[in-house]
Image (cartoon, rainbow, N blue to C red):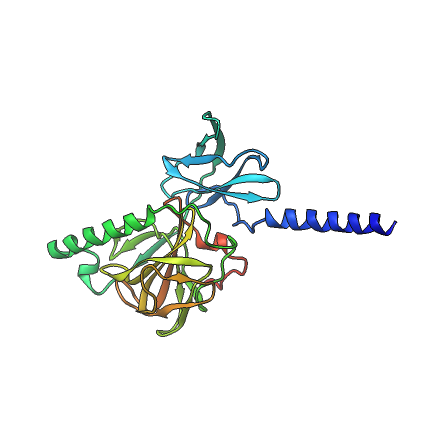
Length: 283
């Protein structure tokens, strides 16, 4: 009897550990432009499929007993039916369809004193194009390993939300691209910490973004930190959750000290708050 109880307890412990090993905390799903879709693909007894959306690699994770695709939906996405393409180990292909709903983002008008930050001159544009090429290259990187142990992030800085994600923006009454991140207002010098494990893949002082850091968290998940006062990490450095990466500043195109925090998933800019359990104080 004792042997039976011991064997049963061991089996239950193994099953608990097995299920826990295949569970990962997922981001909040919001199937809208700028949101995240979580799509069931197959049972984990099947080989892991390779998934593409809009010709971009897509994150695939084990969750409980399923393979799931975690998909970033770009702000430019049209409402309606969207498609994932799955490539299987046996050489076949299949697809998964999902629906994207419409979302109306609010409008924001900002006044920028430095006119060149709204209408750059020719020399500025040469610099901007070089910086954009570096940024695009970093965001297009693909690391098969998921460096972050969870897809639930910490907030990188203590402060209040000064501008929300997705705002339709006007600078000096001129229309510009929607706000691709979340602005957190905090005094200059406030510590910025990594919200999850990752690797530094880009640093530098940019024309619009000021002092900037990009962290790669694996499988197409990248977080971005802009307008920093100073940068305290170097490219290629591995970072643990909670480690300091720099401080809040007001470099680049700004109206005051704050952190612009962005999240990119399969090279689509998505709402960072979908990855955060503890929400932030709104304006």
